[in-house]
Image (cartoon, rainbow, N blue to C red; front, side):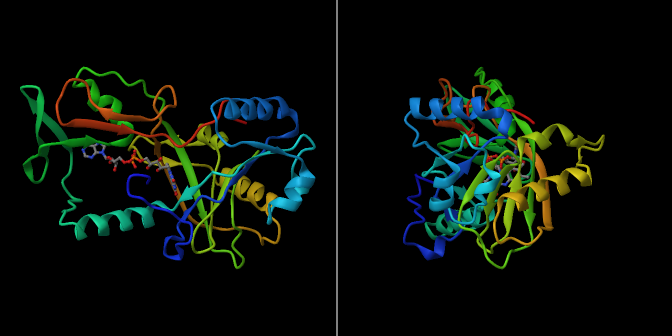
Amino acid sequence: MIATGLSWQGSPQLNWLRFDGGLRWQAADKAQILHQVHVHEVAYGYDSQLLTPDEVAVRIPGIDAAAIPAFGAIWNPGEGWVDLSSLINYLTAGLIELGGEVITDAGIAFVKASAGRVRAIATERYGDIDVDAALLATGSNVPHMVAGFGVTIPDATTTALLIKTRPDRKPAARRRECAAGVVATHPDGAFAVDADWATPRIEVRPDGTYGVPAETIEELLAEASHVLTDTPSLSVETCGIGPKPVPGDGEPVLGRLGDVGGLHCRLHPQRRHAGDDHR
Ligand SMILES: Cc1cc2nc3c(=O)[nH]c(=O)nc-3n(C[C@H](O)[C@H](O)[C@H](O)COP(=O)(O)OP(=O)(O)OC[C@H]3O[C@@H](n4cnc5c(N)ncnc54)[C@H](O)[C@@H]3O)c2cc1C
């Protein structure tokens, strides 16, 4: 996003890109974890503020401060959220405008290199496409594919569940992380809700598809409703499950791959916090 110069501020067309802060808190028995997260964030220079419930009530509209334990919550003013479909459409339009071509049905692809540099992308349906440079960005498959070039990237990919609710009449303005998980807003006023604690409840079926118990979805929605003020009970519009790519040490990977000229790779996790755990 930085590379494309995107900015949500003063740009109403980009209402799907928000960096207007995130609030995070933990259940009452996990004050120590929240404190560790705050100390960790401050140590690496991330803007992290500890707010009391009273301060939350004053500064963060839409949050029921009664849901926040007495030891408070972490406020990250720089936290953000992107609606991925909107971002993909935006980037695609920009690329085409610059004379680029987007191929979405190439099937399985892999990088061909020889004599120390990248030569082509071999594709299932379009054969070899000659290239001067390539960026390997195949999500959870990156660690496996870079191994073919003698590079090791430890893999900590998880499977994630994300629920999009039906749009709410009064969209709230901010992203929230709470004991329940993460609640974020979509441009149409719907909420996106997910939580790490739901991951162990995801079933991978023998045919490779995913499932999750209906009670887990109800529990997530109930928790989300609980922390929002002025919000009617939430209902599911879509429910997505899939791999969430994460490098082993949680740090983003971006750069040239080994000694192969023109070949780069990218594996970028969503931001994780020290002390993140499962309920
Ligand atoms: C259900 C769900 C919902 C999410 N919603 C949001 C959201 O709304 N906002 C947000 O910020 N984050 C969201 N996330 C997290 C987000 O999806 C990931 O952080 C992000 O998609 C990672 O992008 P990526 O390009 O690295 O990998 P991916 O999005 O996984 O893309 C990699 C692509 O490469 C393809 N591929 C792999 N190997 C090959 C191969 N050999 N040949 C050809 N193609 C290959 C894969 O099929 C895949 O399409 C969500 C995650 C999940 C699981």
